[in-house]
Image 1 (tube, one colour):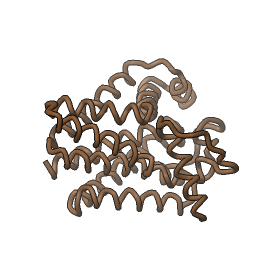
Image 2 (cartoon, helix red, strand yellow):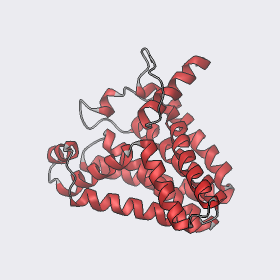
Image 3 (cartoon, helix red, strand yellow):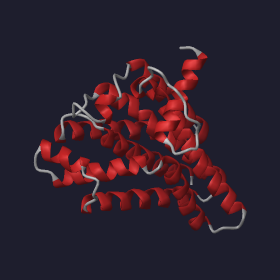
Image 4 (cartoon, one colour):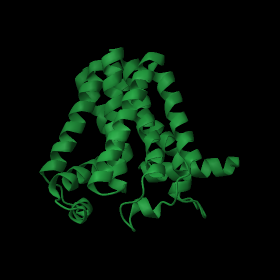
Length: 252
């Protein structure tokens, strides 16, 4: 891949996965599926925003519990709550639908139900609790970078091994994801976790992420027979929560 191609892929993922004010770009024939290896780099940008907010606010004397909430808000603002939306849709669909078709129909409904609201509440509570448990600004900074990068590193692999559940929508429209792209994304996530968390926490986090990945794959296959854009969002949330909990448990 040429340097221009790498830059285009990173830019495409930043445009798709964040709400950063980027200029209008022409990506030509590039598809999200071909550029998805750069998803963890977009996650790095999201984690950086949250980490900087925590470091700056605690440096100004803001109590760490409030700083943790502000850091979480920053990550949600920068990502446009894209993955939170997927988590709530999956919770509503898997929890409220009786058949595969009904589950997919509910997941497309923009309204949020009790399952979706509960899933969002638990996601935010778990992430905030993990952030404030770390307390130390440097630990929070690196843990957020690791969590947001590693969680998005799972997405290409999930798209590679799981067929789309629909013939339309994000998953099918993104195009094929090659194994090389999946491995590249996983490598980026592993490197950032190692730098941010150290070897011991990285090994534990990687093992936990693998368990989450395959358990969620089994659930999606059983519930809807494949993956959708919403399931990718839910997987990101599960991965982010997992890494933050491991960091809080081992490093705090």
